[in-house]
Length: 464
Image (tube, rainbow, N blue to C red; front, side, top):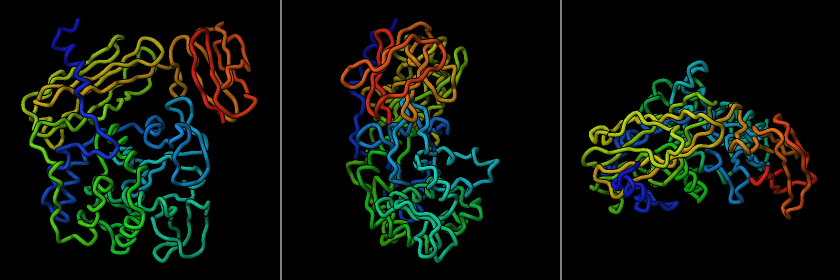
């Protein structure tokens, strides 16, 4: 049983740091104050390079928060105007779309080695993309098409430019997004400079500081200036920070690009006073109360997630604990984090394990306190137990695996003989049957929102 101290700590969620969509954590950028050009870029590199390394197979789970439009259903695609809906399964892919490395993965390593690098799963440059547009983009450089066009869907364009036979040009409304993504990548991964491969060398140099060739610098700075930071980027940056633990500084401070490649290269950057702090602050996990997704796994198996813990000015050791771990399926490798490690550039890697004994979604909370931080930081944990690792997620023993595709609802329950009812948005039953325990399907009469009910439990699903 928790003692009163731990109960009060858990209640400390009320005192957790809350950030608005445009807020930057105090202390996050302390080390860049007073730095100029390449010293500034390297200082940013040191802030960004150590982050939570995500799993490539989990990208569609993260896209539900990073790349969803305001309607809550459709994917924000910077590569086409095709309207596509998220799979109702939170980790299922969207038909017709792919996970796109906006900075091509072939630029830093050959195919057999590429997955060993952190950039491979960096969510800041991994976008959901229209399949045909992504395939047309291939590993081409960014540029403006001035000659023969080989692909054009009115958002993405591929064709000849004065710098290469085939280049990729995004729509004007996204050119700034791509420029700031590239600025982030060559800053976070400036240590890749010596290994940029042949395709990258159209735009890049093999040097840690400048990296951008003169023509590429002029192009990206033009795109950056002409297409300023918008709310989409701000919200996405915050969401990625919640998952990955680092930020895109060129979204937080658009003027930063001028200090590296523009009109302020001879000026030292001054961090706004209200963002400086000498107080103890926990920077990672991000104090935005984002859910930490451990992953999906089969019953009686174990999966481990590394969670970076990093702070500024921590005074004394941090304490970590699990709260509301009612299933007992989550575990920690450590309950005390030395402040000397948490304050370091590399931070401290905490191991969180998930070992489920029954099907469904399981949750708990990771609570971090002491070290002099104000209150406590609480991070919700979630793991999913399923026998279908490919995608479909059971919500509980009496819920069905459930997803929609091509105008149909597909379902399965772990409790055969359950009755299932499918209702339209007005509550009218359009289909009912007895579950068999295997996959079954129903083609809906029209696109829209439906309610799938098994016994007294119900889920909403959108069918296009």
